[in-house]
Length: 125
Image 1 (cartoon, rainbow, N blue to C red):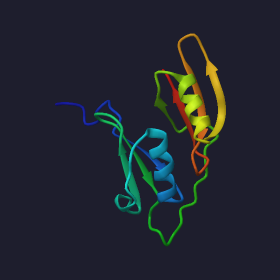
Image 2: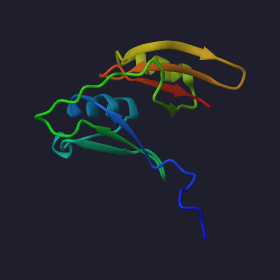
Image 3: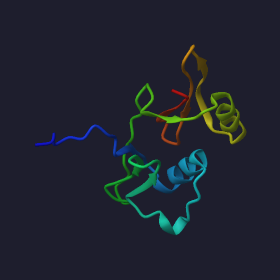
């Protein structure tokens, strides 16, 4: 019998207070085109790779705004081949930098704040 839990990441949920605002922000970060009519509360999902997606969750409904308490560390990372180029892109787009580029021998990263002050790491490792 196979193990009931598979060793792969399916979706990452990010809790947000304003779904439309967050979809716009993440679509800019991920270079994804999103039509306003495709954004329907309470969730929106970006497909990222073969098995992984990013789901923005503003539920339970528009009448009950969600309270989001950001953690003091990154929720997850998004891959880049070129951290310095990604950092320049983020600055040019006016995205809020939470931490500048940090470089190690085999890993480099920087952090951004999303609209709810969740910290997102952009990383080459």
